[in-house]
Image 1: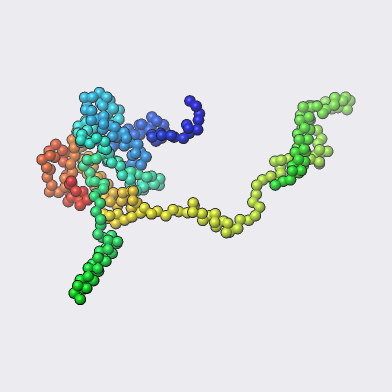
Image 2: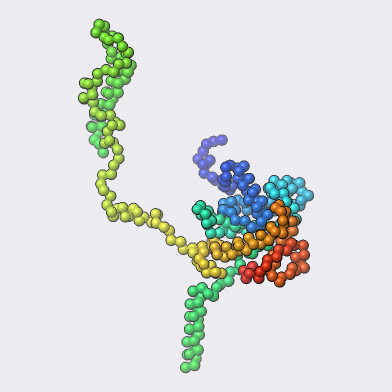
Length: 167
Length: 176
């Protein structure tokens, strides 16, 4: 291996460094992924959520092959440390995303953690979970100051126009 | 900036001293003279009186080579350095009021108040699920559906496990 400057710059490297090394990183991601499959919505730091997303979606792709497939079962067995989630993965999550080709997860950013570290947090969820939705459809709120002022202005103009018509 | 001649003198003196020290260490300066010589170790400290008076203090003893400010920095210069924009707090233009509740939020981050509401409700739902499951690691291979007061499941929800919540459905948790 040539010790070049290229080695110090991370050209095109997608995987973040996490934990104590590559093995520790995979173990951490495995724990987070197990939690995600169990609870279907979890809060973690932004970097970890971003890393787990890839693995979460790949796991669903493997699960879609069916539980008779040997490779899929091996993957599920490795990635899910709590073995009561394997039936849930194959019988609940895989059929849920049958029609969808790609995007099974949703990640949204949250205000920083309240602890001393003020870590940047994110919430990661599988779509179609039973919990309340994170984002409702955007509707313009009439009670904001600007909208109230605009409403008053519109009413004023309407009154003036009515007064002109009468006169 | 020291002048070159002074530097040259210093170099010459230090080289001469170095030479003396080397000769003394190797023992080349000693004449093997008899009679009045004293029996003792060869590396005796020789009287250096003549040399000490003439030699200048060595490089490291002299403080004249250390960097030091020449002039007092005026308050104007200090102010311009301290108030440089790179050190000042940056003004954030990405703060706006949340549409739902009116609390302030950053544009790319969920509203803290709204998320806290959702989180509390999710925690209560999870409490119900835990009570239903009984022991840990007992997840059923079924979808879950959350129903509030006076709500009944549809035809398509037959296979799902129902989680009951004893309250009215919140406005921000629509069924669809």
